[in-house]
Amino acid sequence: MYILGIDTSFDDTAAAVVYKETILSSVLSTELSVHQKYGGVVPSLARNAHAHNIDLVIARALKRAHIDWDVIDAIAVTRGPGLAIALEIGIAKAVELARLQKKPLVAVNHMEGHLLSFLARPLPKRSSLKRNYPDLSAIFPTLSILVSGGHTQFVYAERIGSYRIVGETKDDAMGEAFDKVGRLLGLGYPAGRLVEMMARKGKYTSVRFPIPMQQVKTAETSFSGLKTAALRVVEGIRADHGELTADDISAVAHGFQAASIQHLQEKIDYCLAELHKEGVSVSSLTAGGGVIANTEVRISLKKIAKKEGIPLYLPYSKKLCTDNAAMIALAGYYQAAVGNYVECQETIDRLPTMRLSSDLVA
Ligand code: KG4
Ligand code: ZN
Image (cartoon, rainbow, N blue to C red; front, side, top):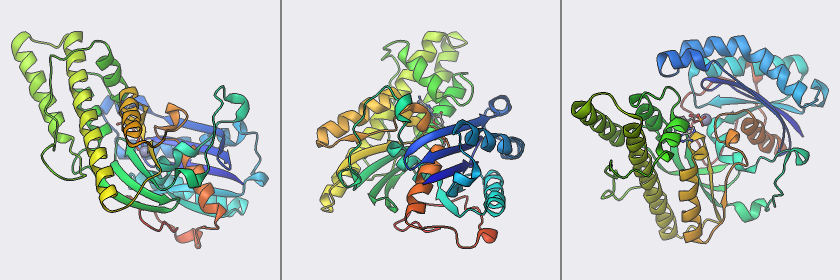
């Protein structure tokens, strides 16, 4: 099955073509300079950029995949969660193309895309890695760690299409905290990758952050306290010797990153312990979302999986961690494979607060 995927949930305009789990093309357009000017994503500007870029992005995805419309079996589009006025652009375009090209439509939950992104495969000839692909039955049930700019969720996935959120953030998402602390340190937007880079510049232990929610027996995470702690540290440094030096920035970035990863790790441990108590076993640990591009986060997940004696599956490239339409096409493929199509294309609407649930039906 060949699937065209479209995602306009946030600031990236994305389209991709997959053949089953194999990515044939994945195209992304981001008007980063616009958002950087405002230090974050401005919904109306994101919408304008989507409207401006979407036709070109889709055309490029088809061209790079060397695929004509007659080969495409279905169109998959993100229905939510995301910015309402941004989602609308992708959905309207998908509906228009489905009618024009007489294709069935699949509505995808963006978080299911992140959750399944570890299953995507590169074209064999482009891949230098020889990977073994385990059977789905060896992977599921899995505990999926989803950490992005908008979400921090621990999801028990019994199988593809059956999801239970067992823990999530009660305030900021982890990526959002990286962005806010990065902004405080003058690193621009989005800052996650730059915070990681600065943190690596030295093994500073001079700035220690308190680990959130250690005494609270819950699978909830909280990152807003770390952001406030970073603000206090920065104010302290400024009062002491004026503007931040590169060493100061590295020290704060290192302290913040170390504390946020320890917090994440402790809450994943808690989730796994709770699932064990329920008598629920997981066959693997899986992960997706922009923050999974962080090397230290990956190392911490590897440690947890090793301790649990289960395998860890991550997206094969960091580009698959951050937003992309290949993961939407892939999630769409699994739904199309079981005939889960949108019944009435004309009335499909965006769901900005769409949540993962036990029975994802379009
Ligand atoms: O998944 P994503 O592209 O978009 C959402 O669905 O939110 O995630 C973007 C988030 C941003 O907050 C960005 O700062 C963060 O992922 N991020 C990182 C890294 N790369 C991206 N955070 C920490 N370390 C990184 N290397
Ligand atoms: Zn995302």
